[in-house]
Image (cartoon, rainbow, N blue to C red; front, side, top):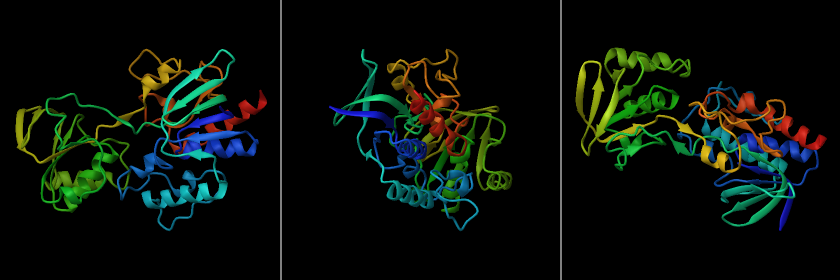
Length: 321
């Protein structure tokens, strides 16, 4: 049986930051990541630009050199690969954790699709990008409905419907339009989200104002068919021709996974996990949360630049015990 002081579930930037702190304290640790290193960033759109500047994405006091004011996906992948080269993490990639169970001896049994491990402490740093928030409408299961967006090329010269008005929706709408797609947006509220990147928001608003991109505000999709989509608008039902639906309605953490570990969630719609903000320890002793997963359904609350500190809070607490 493989035994550790600390197992970190999730090999994203915050999981790596936790590993760096564990190395500083000479803890025997292991990162277990179900995909590639920084897998969520790998799955971002190819030409995505971060809202944060490069220095706010840094971990381990290693500079993130970037020529542009804001780094993109490719630069971030290069940076975090170099972080791994520098620290030589103890990490298992493409290994999925299925269960974290606390035993009677107070150790944790961590079960994956490849092995079983024992650890005195566990950090859950799994992010939120794995489970799309469903629209729950007829036809959502059709192959033309996509909850993830990679690049615009396959949508060129097609009728595209983009759902939502957040950063991912706006980026996709603009990229597809610039590649020749006929783009329509369906937006639940009466305006573009205020959290949209400040240099992009005027662009999408101007494209809508001039009619280059059609937008239905205060509207919802009601049914999706093979060649068309039905939309409920303030002026009644509208039916438009459609080839693809980009349902970029957001994502959520695997809350069921947290509950199975014994972590308590708030009873409201936010589903906020229970943890001590000074140590990041949950209601289960020795089980910690780090990064965006701490926010439950509030996936905009925590991100790389403001949750890097979780790593030192957790490892300092572990080392003090």
